Length: 424
Image 1: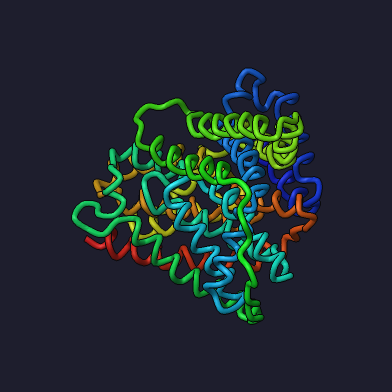
Image 2: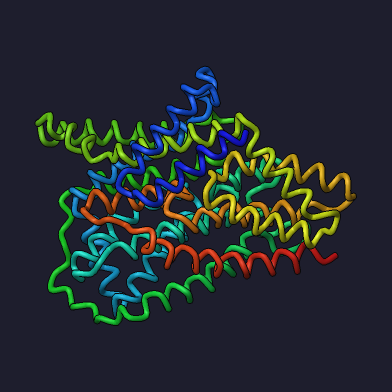
């Protein structure tokens, strides 16, 4: 177990130091886990979240068609007409991403919103790096707002047999949704402060961009509708969302081929898929599978539970902030899956209502990924988009937005959930 943990820590440190080589470090470390026997070969496929991989590939392809249609440029024009300066353009884009992310996967949200933000930054001749980072962290925040916003929310809802409405009103009290929105309000203020120097006025648009083809936009909207609809299907295949995105991409490629009558109409969108980001995620999934196989995640969960020492408030505090710290480095899905039964056992042993502990787990685990550039798939995706545009994201670039954003979002939720569900 200690060897696996050491290997994992070294890999993460190297990825933070050598940001340009993250995909290769992750894949090489994943290979070491397999070759060394820390992760048995027959278990490798089970560690990879193919739903996320397929969803990224499919959505990236659709987004390339979306960009080609000039719809992001039109949306950028519309937003620029409505906001007074660059600061409010950044805040508007991050809030817009948050609203969408409450209903569909965070990665898909970043892939859909980032092209619009890039177009705004091109028109304003400003650095898009903080824009995209703000969009990514806002997407992660709102993933916990509804039952369908994130995989961890779906997992908790399933464990507690919660309905979509229960996230708004649970056990006769305002639910998880309002904890997230309190964090969203404070984090929006933090973003306003971080972008305080971006006071350049928005230039007037002489003429709105004309969209050349509305089919890609229909496909993208169809993706959102189908992903929301699929979230309500019980016992669906784990790769449902990924298959939806890939199926719509295939439709888009066929349409593009018929329209252009040129095979490059198929090849060009596929080339736009960021295979480096996919490689990084593959490596991380295998690494996390390796430490999970060796009992590292179980040991961490047990350590957190023991630190509470029977005091519910201390236990709640440890779960929230411990989850923030752990999720900054470990994918929150296996962690939450491990902690759900641990919390159930604790509640039974202490004879308490576990609601506050469950909600604290979801809040901390969802927001913790915003602390580091590789703490959440949405962050990795956003950085990958910037890399393709020729922008290198330094760790300092991410930390100065991600860390204050995380604190601003977590503290209100932490206080709200305890007052609402901890004090009986």
